[in-house]
Image 1: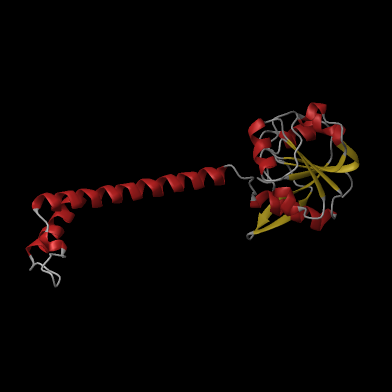
Image 2 (image 1 turned 90 degrees about the vertical axis):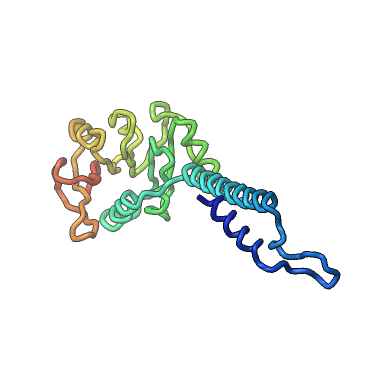
Length: 221
């Protein structure tokens, strides 16, 4: 045990020849009694435990602060970049049910991105980081955009259609069946994104179920 280590170490130092100054006063730790050795060992152990506790609390605080920051997901960012390569830069991007995901800001750095989410905690995280976000559900939203991103939205895909400009497009994944919903609503699927040899590519005319990534619906390709 750590306490036993310090007892032995201090005890060995006590057994050495005492050290005194020119006036004969002992100055070395070697002059300590058994009680003093025990007290010093206990203090060293207490300081060590306190240091570990402070270190643990600082790490916990750091983790909490990291958790409470907006997130960027490289997969979504890469989809945005590939979309721009294939279809050109969107003027206005709408990301409802965004939670605390800021990936479109990185993927579309020259586009206007509108974030929307009804969740109090997500809105607080985004606003604390200086990210403008609308605190509401999509049901009451009236804006229109040439690109809408539906990534795991907690609402029916049909609610997003009134927000799509004529000839606009939708990027959607199918984790919650959103891509299937858009297909059922009659939106033409232009293609999907997939990885080939570690590189993200766009595959025209892909079928839902053949890819694990995102799909593009809507306007002309």
